[in-house]
Image (cartoon, rainbow, N blue to C red; front, top):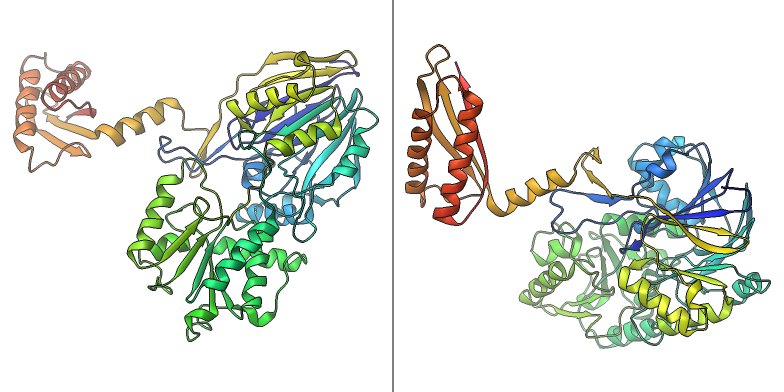
Length: 550
């Protein structure tokens, strides 16, 4: 690279929802924007979270000058506890974003070793070859930023996650005027959120959601239970406002809600009367029409407050006939089955449930098609790269940019690892970096690869069979066995005849294998058992022969 080039390397977030991470690099400096995680798909058995491959940065960490976090959602900052131990650079973000990060780092005992530097909206921050201006944007979390980036080769706008709410609550708006002013002198490149490009029109306004919730409160005669994303402080404020309007008290259940409510109150983003917020014990004797329960569990998480209530496993609360449950969040793909299971359980207990498909009780935090157009028309970029979305989202957003008048040859659809170079002559594709997401399983980071996951999938689908033989060391005679132990394969009492037949097959193999050739005996047993189980049961369990000599 020369001093008139900027390299952009997406390490995550282009081709999936989550893992958002982008690196900006010049000859002498490097800045990382976001460092998010992704929750695992069902087939990733035992995996806790997925984080981006950050080897590219770690191999050049002497160039890394800063990490900038656009907002406080897990898919933008959740991977930092696994990355920060290996680098020594400041982390910049809004005060609320950094408070959320501080909580995560405390769980990992890292808070004393990391420099967190809060920035304010419209602040301009010089970091080596880059300058960053922080523009407020409306999203489903407070204090989110778009980034106006000044580079040696021109201006870049990174929208972060945003929507253009024409009627926001608590002044949480996307400042298009400031963004336009930044871009008026010429915007080289726009990097824009693609999540909701498939949705026509505009996202619902938060004030429309307030009105819908208000109508529900008017009609509710019993308890109202509300579940939502615990980071959605604007929506939490609406619940408290409505509780006070209708003379109800708010009771909270769920650790993440307790933490985020305390953080938001401390920073002045959440305001309500002291006597509105009660503990479960203090609210026990209140009439049903005087209570609002604010709960975790909007995605059907098994250990969340709402899921435990639905299963009648909550220690302090229970669902009562006539309860009205409001699920004020969208169904994240992959969670639909878990959410519908909770909804069905709630109905079995006599509750009524309102969710996004049957009522306007949730507004997305991501711009719909018309808002995405408005962003493009506002900044008039020379080049365009869609970010934050699955591949089809990126393609459709690229098509939308062309419809808005951007030259087709100046619109690039990238995937993770596909770097580009921005220089005075324009934008060009650079080499592709091979990236594999990193799986976190307990305390293990990156030690679970495809072969381990394949074994876990087989174990989950086919089960395990262990065959044990003990031989006399000197003569090779059979002292014990064959003993067959199965887990997740067959019900041993019902299929005992098949396991007995398997033992006979093992004895035939033993008798026809030269003595003292333990490895050959194990290989033969594995092979014949797998063929036998496939032929008789149509199953192929993980088969482990163990031959010991005593």
